[in-house]
Length: 311
Image 1 (cartoon, rainbow, N blue to C red):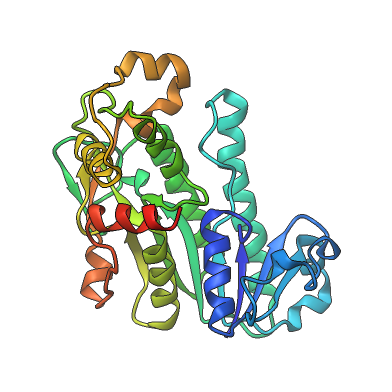
Image 2: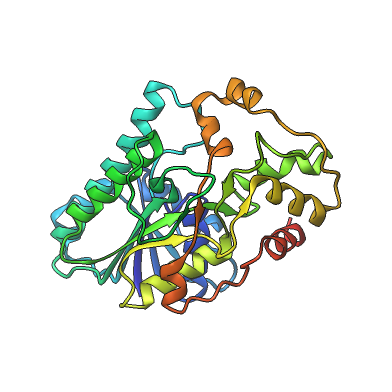
């Protein structure tokens, strides 16, 4: 297959590109930098010895009339400014604008192609459901929340629905992705490794998580199974509370779990961004399970143990 990825240098995108390289697929990352900066001779452009080469294309190249003849089987749109920053007014604008702009640019390029891709995998997030200590959400739940993350995610999905009309669209609603090379997990685990683990706030907030290998496999599954369309929750079938999360990871690493972090202290340190840790939602991957996807790491204990061995 010929697959193009926006956000391909990020945590999930990099793991996804490496996986598909190993499978022998033609993978290209759409980036703002010049492709000469990422030549195929660069070791970073190879997942490992024997992997297929990784190409890089700029948005300027895709805007050229010659790009209309590019053959594409699938496009994965993961690009967007990180949420892991203090949410000032400027940061909020960047978080929203980066997602809408990249989706608009990608859609315009895709619609200009002489031969359209079979599927678009569109990045999204479980934040679209809003937060709750008691409710359970799946793909049939109506996203009616009115907080910052819910509004950003809803606009992101709407832009994709409008821009990619006529093409099979999978809206990948991602939870907390656990891996050693990026994302939130290394920071979530750090206090535990230092022997200062404990619940955050009440500890009752839900953590919808997924192992990095499972989200890569799920994206691959969505690309290859033409019956998968619409919203897909990229989370483990076994979400846990924040308190359970900390206790399990502490047990895996054989570290004490005794020092809670009060909610007010986290709000003081992080401001509004603290909602990422203080609030959550219990989300289930109903669509993935109904379509027959198999999770390699459905339980947090096995996921944390695997990541421990790969540190």
